Picture (spheres, rainbow, N blue to C red):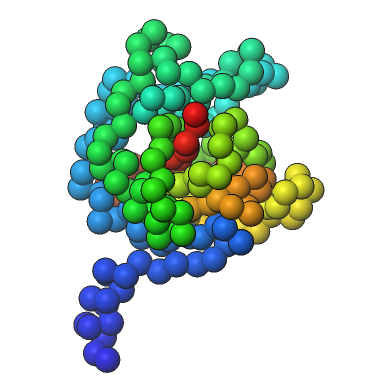
Length: 217
Ligand code: MD6
Ligand code: FE
């Protein structure tokens, strides 16, 4: 096979890497959605700007967040919850754009979960130094649905543990366009993001944006 032909196949066939039973890393899967994805993201952020939410313990998160879809994940002094309304504006969260839904459903199918129909997309913004400590995603009603996680912008180290907080996490470098699909036996695995190293991405600037799609309700 010539190098050119090999490159052409690599372009249309993003690689997949098993992370655990039920979790797969689809490298570059979001790239073919990029031209619609990034403008749609900018529109959402114009309507519902990024904000640093507080944890129930009273700490401000280093990651800034917003949401789109019928249910948005929020945290404040009273706890974590899904809420249809943006507490900053009192308005419903922006609608989930078609390109978001299509990317999430196609990635889920690729990961072995058909008919994924997310009602929530949490959008996280990491600036250099921001991190996410180990946690489980367990505020959703139905753990049968997977989570689809899309990375954009500068690279991050994703920490992926097990069912116990003390399980030593494996480390995965996630770059612009990578998608993690996550469900079944690993749906409740602890995970987090190491402090973001400084960097610059041509399209996204000096930040990492992560979209996590869930079926919340
Ligand atoms: C992040 N992601 O990558 C944080 N949760 O910025 C998550 O917390 C996450 O990527 C559940 C499943 C996939 C994820
Ligand atoms: Fe999470």
